[in-house]
Image 1 (spheres, rainbow, N blue to C red):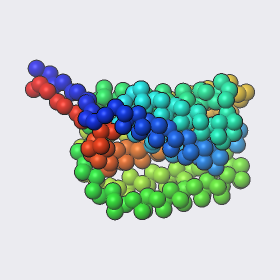
Image 2: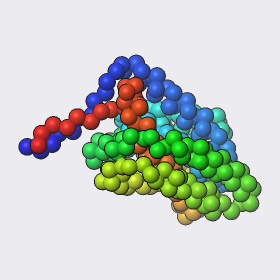
Image 3: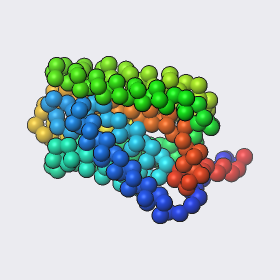
Length: 258
């Protein structure tokens, strides 16, 4: 008899609704900051260092496909409106569609399809030791983004910041995780970031850029920044999923069959 995996929640739906709003607001505020500080010189709304991708992935995995999509998509759309008044079709594609469908809805379904436990078998205790280091790294990342942006280096200006983001997993490397689930989660992060980058590139093409210019000026940096941020989100899942479960915000996985 094959094993059957059931994702189930404990606690009230009302609490998850509040959490959906909280995630959406956090994504909107952080997204507006990142769009302002790390946007492509040629495309408004294309943020190379899209740190909200971590929150969007977490919202999808913890809150489920629908709530995750609402938080990720509407939060990103609000971020664009706050940052530069982005209401149009290119902005809809780059923000609510890329943010809601690619960054939130896709991981929600793919984690369930791959039968990944979002706590990755970790108790999350080690993250407390690395939390301050992570916060310092993020502060350096934002400072680098501000310092290098006026040099008009295109997406290359964000490579040092992206490298720093990729250092974060090493800071938290003492977390004990299930290798199979973790590797699949990283692959999912790469896939959803690629889909999001394709959608973002499409949005900039509709805004008037050629495909070649959009890929070079927006797509590459979008993909790298989202991938690094999603990997950060995976480590946050490993660190705090069990705590979120106890509050009814993240699902338990019930396995039946042999």
